[in-house]
Length: 324
Image 1 (cartoon, one colour):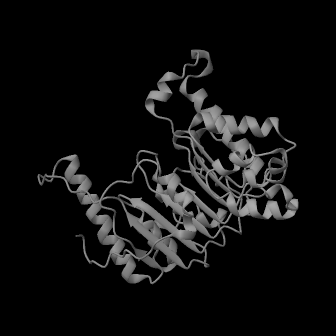
Image 2 (tube, rainbow, N blue to C red):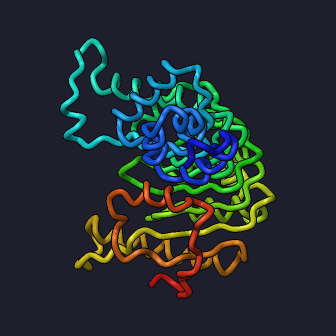
Image 3 (cartoon, rainbow, N blue to C red):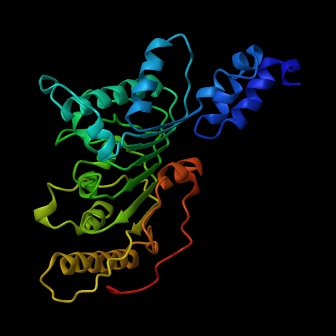
């Protein structure tokens, strides 16, 4: 039946159908020559890349198929490989070992973002140690609306953010993670306002400590103490909503007050106390309850598939006061 419809109508149908990680798009390409041709643009609307192999493979595909008009609107890219996978990769000592691996993936990510940049609207990125190997060349994503970063992207060392000023960017989601070497404080020190000058919605998830003072001073310049003036860049005046989502509560069976477990619980208690104080001071700040369990494996991709920032749930509120 589809073979009998005009290509313009087919393309419109495929645009609505291709909303998953790319499986539907690949299936359409195998139906018939006509369907393959009419679904060409829609086949690359949503792209999900998980791990080193898929990232390198897609970068190579783009390099070898420059004649295809790839207009990706939504991109999920996770460069994380397990330790077992990393150990299975062998590089001669002269190649720099693991650093060579990081440079290879970082270079592939740069080529992908450069190729998809003109049409990209939603980006969910997790690069871990690869971030440090990203080239210092600025990245332009002129139509980006929603950015979720589970790493230090778009920052590189102490320089300006890698992402050029993006006036279309409205939603920023920063996922705090010690494992992924994320430093939330850096986003306030190096300047969200630089790469997202028209930001309206900010979400900080999996918070485990720190960052609340930086957020408070970035929201209200009048509260910044003199010693912090050179450290904090103010958030855009366009800010409408800040969602705070703490990490799973630290509740270790220890009360000695001297061990790492006690330090961790004390840090978490301070986080909750400061977050609740800020919620009561600033009407733009909404504090959500912490999850009872850690995020399940694959939940990052599922969140992207479910809509990302456009589907933020702010109904499960934390209404407590104080530390606990």
